[in-house]
Amino acid sequence: MATNGFAEFLIARRAELRPGDVGMPEGRRRRTPGLRREEVAVRAGVSADYLARLEQGRDTNPSVAVVDALADALLLRGKQRHHFSLLALASGNESRCPGSESAEEQIAETIQSILHALQPTPAFVVGRRLNVLGWNAAWADFAAPIGLLGTEGQPNLAWYTFVDPTARTVLRNWSEAADLFAAALLRAKSRWPGDDSLLETIDALRKYPAFAERWKPHQVGAPASGMLHIDHPEHGQVAVPFETLEADRDQSIVVWLVDQAQVQTQGLRLVRSTAVNE
Image (cartoon, rainbow, N blue to C red; front, side):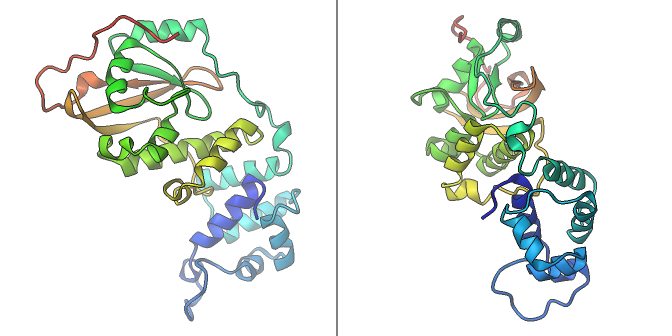
């Protein structure tokens, strides 16, 4: 079983490729999808046993030449190739990576002031694990009726999406939102590979099939903007564009641009209270 990001990437990418992708005949039906380990090893000029040790996390010190050869064998280009190389450098040394320690999940007063200033535009702050660390009154007014603030403990976007059954009825583009949050956690794991709290969150979520099937270590990046289609119990069907702004190395401010939303009911009015989460 893979024990690091580089090993996970190797296994996932090998499973994704087909013989035809690398100019090989498809041949007979295969018991498992993707290229065989031996086929990748031949293309990269390494032994199948060595590739097995890399995939199992038993060898965590591949040379630059081997990493380049594997990248060529796996048809990696651009951002994927760069990401693959970074994972190789961190392989086996995740706990020594800068910023790999678990983050302090508290927001600074300056960030809290930004949330105040964004009022009446709904905005909130998320941490590495997609915990919602703080929010303004406009976001609370909009998020509470859809169940985002109704769970015990700290709200978490991923747990809400994959575990709370409410999410599938509220998010009309649930699949897109699920893809987005899985990709965001993947990006976080690549950035902070030694954060035990983050890894525990991901491991717990991978027990849910909907998350597990979206966990694709060979994919890179997550969009900082997008659209949520929400079936809101008070405001009807709302299309909410969002933008994500990095506040510091651990936290991001997410702004829901509801002023641009298309709603069934006339006059979207979100602000009813003045309370802001502290």
